[in-house]
Structure formats: structure tokens, C-alpha cells
Length: 291
Image 1 (cartoon, helix red, strand yellow):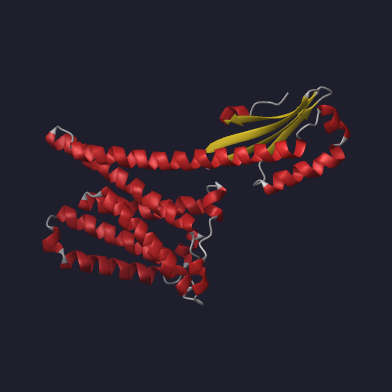
Image 2: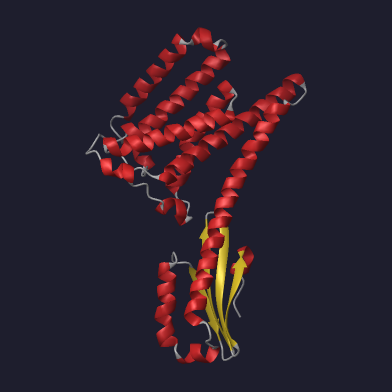
């Protein structure tokens, strides 16, 4: 799902928005007795409008085109494993956050709401190529699920605050759910980020050691015309990391730095008179001046 801002310029936005609102009001009216209080009816209305907004953005934004059945056998991992955060990722998260928020406030079941949102995202990613209105992408499912999880966490926090104010005590079960939600969100974010960054760093170090093992700073100085293209090829085939270098008569350094989501890792190729080594670094170590 790309170019989200274009939805505000589509001719059918006003019509679809009106239909979504009418359907949401109709469902809320039909279920008013089951929903009970005005507060719950309002939450149901907001959750339904949020769901309608998701459908508008993902399935109704563009006219249907040619179906792509073979797309269902191809679920690209490129964006998910690229480690880069773009505007589309942030908007995918924001798209599902209101649904997770209002649905959790209504049903007070953050895990079931998040699971349902993940299933909804999967269904949308399957329908999009069949209607010809988008491509199926695992990165979208991950971002949508994260958005719903964040919304559910905000709702659980709001419910805890309400309980503390009205009854002057915390609901232990709800507090446990919030703790689990936070732990899962932070754990997944950090685990994926750190694990991916460490993998990239280790792979880069192995490649550099295989290319330059047994060489010295003298070799580096004499063969720069040969090694320059090798280092450039390494740079291109390893996600074009940030690169900086330093050299004098005693030492030569080439540092390659990767940022994978929220984690920074680097590998420094180090030549001196004794031979070649690689030095691994992280975070601030990757920005210190080479010398």
C-alpha cells in the first residue's frame, strides 16, 4: 500500500466516506440494545468507521484492475528484511491503530483484537492483488499488526487509568495484559532489529575476512587500484552501508555502517604492518572518528 496521501484526492472518497458513515450508524442503531450504554455505542461506531476507513484506503481507493492470481504464490520479503523505515510503514501502522484502540476499549480484549486485526490485514493482502488494487506484502501485515497492537496497548492503559480513578485500585488482570502487550511489542521490535543488524554485521565481517585475510597495510597501499573495486562491490552487495575511511603509512581503515530499523552496527576493515583484522562496533562506536 503506497502513496497513501493520494486517497484524499480521489473522486470517490466523499461517496465512500458517506457510505461508510451510513453503514456504521445503521449497524450501531441495529445493535443498540446489545451494545447497551451510549458510551459503548459510540465506541462501536468509531470502531466501525475505523474499519471502513481501512477498507477505503486498501480496497476502494483505486478502480479494480486485472487480477494477479500468481501474486498469491509470491510474498516478497524485501521490504520486511530491508531494515528501512519509510513513510508507507508509518502510515500502515497509523491505519490500524484507531481500530485497535476503539475495539479494545469496547471489548476489553487486546489480544483477540490484535489477532483479528492481523487476520484482517492478511485477508486484505490476499484480496488486493485479486482486485488489482495493490500488491500483497508481508511488510504491510507486520506494520498493520503492530499498529493494532499499539492501539490495543493505548486502550488498555486508558482502562487502567479509568479504573484507578473510579475505584482507586488497579485491575490486576488488565495490568498483566498491558505488561504482556508492552513486552511483546518491545520484544518484537528490539529482537527483529538487533537480530537483523547482528546478522548483517557478521556476514559483512566474514566477507571482508575472506577477501583480505593475510594482507597488510603495505599490500593495501600498493594494490589500491585493485582493492578499490573489491570494496565498492562489497558496498553495493551489502545494502550500500555508510562508508568512511582513513589511512597513513602505518594503518588503513575502511568502516562500513548499517542501520537496521532501530539498530546501528558497523564493521571496520583494519590493515596494519602485522596483517588484516576486522573490528565490530555498534551505535556510537560507528560514528567515532577513524584514526
